[in-house]
Structures are given as C-alpha cells and as structure tokens.
Length: 243
Image (cartoon, rainbow, N blue to C red; front, side):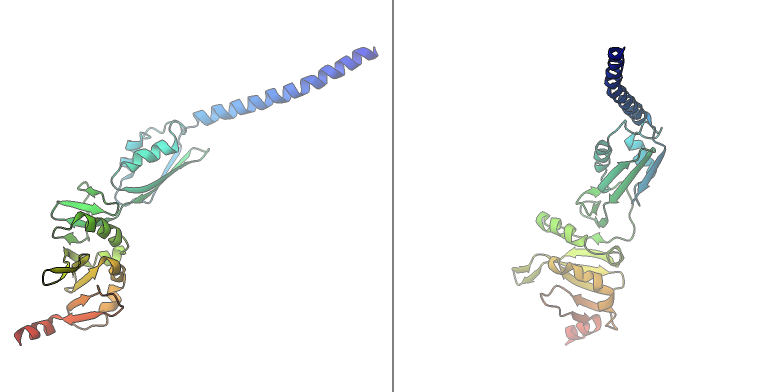
C-alpha cells in the first residue's frame, strides 16, 4: 500500500507542471486570438490642416474599420509618407482598438510663378491645394541657391512669412562682380522693401519690431554681417535722385 501512495504522489507531481504549461498555452492562445481579431474602434488623426481625415482614411483603406493588426504601423506610415503634404508621421495602436495617426504637415512657403506651383518646406511642389497668405517668388533662382533658400525660409514663422508679398532673387553686385549670391529682395504687404541674405534670414522674425522704430516707408537692409540695421526712406531716396 505504501508503494501505491508513493506512485500516486509522483504521478501527481509530474502532472502539475504539465497542467500549468497547458493553462499558460491556453491563455496565450486566447490572448493571441483576441489580438488578431480586435477591430479598429476609434481613429484619431492629429496635426492636419490641409489634409482631410477622409483622404487619409481612404488612402489607408480603414474606412470600414478592419482588424487592428491587419496592417502594421510601419506600412501605414509608409503609405502616408507618399503624400506630398506629409513631412513626418507616426502611427500607434492600442489594444482597446484605438488607432492614432499623428502627422506633421509640410509648410507651404511660397508660390513659384516661374514653375506655376506652390513650394513646400520639404522641397516638394504641389498644385493640389490652394494656400492663402504666402508670398510669390517672381523670378528664377539657381537650383543650389533654391535648396538653401527653402531650408532657411522654413525658419521664418508663419506670422512673419505672411507679411511678405513678393520675393525676388537679387544678388548684390559691384559692377559685374557678384558679392553675395544669396541675397533676396522682399516686398512687404505694408509697402516696405527688405534686403535679406540666407545667413541672416532669421532676422525676418524680428521685422515687426525693427520697423516699429521708423515712422516712414522705405527699404530695410538686413543682409549685413553685423547687427546694424540700415533704413532708407522712400522720401530720402527720391530726394537724393533729384539732387
């Protein structure tokens, strides 16, 4: 009888880890099944101004709220990155069925009259949207200067970018010698003109403060290497011409 008891105890001890393992596998299987079949319940899209939610949802093929893990986050991000207005995107999922799409849109910087298109902060161009309050580039800019110009202009705030009416590429020269091939002439909506070069373009963010120091309309030269601001009123320019 004692031997039988020992056998029963040994069998019971051997069955216990098997039962625990089986239970663990069952739990994992149920969780995995739930995970693979949970549908998208809510879609949150953040950071968009020009892109429409409908456009994004249709592109990602999630209009009918398919299973949450039918697509990977990376595959959804890759689709959105193909949109010209998308500069950066992050897609995340929650086990409760929430899909979050956070988008950083490209900024419209100016309209290029020569190429008949809007130029974005990414360097891409578009005619698919209508943007208001941005300046017009009125003449040709060499490609190597244009690339730098787009990058630097993106540093100017939207509020100050909207103060510009026209942009003209205007290298400074001494007779036939080019002194600064990164200079631009900006015609402002308030009637002033501003000379700026790429190295000093962030000074445009202080334009309202600088101009508040003067009582007349005129030309501001912000392209110098030092902090000195040169202002010439239209009145004084006209008087000098008459002399």
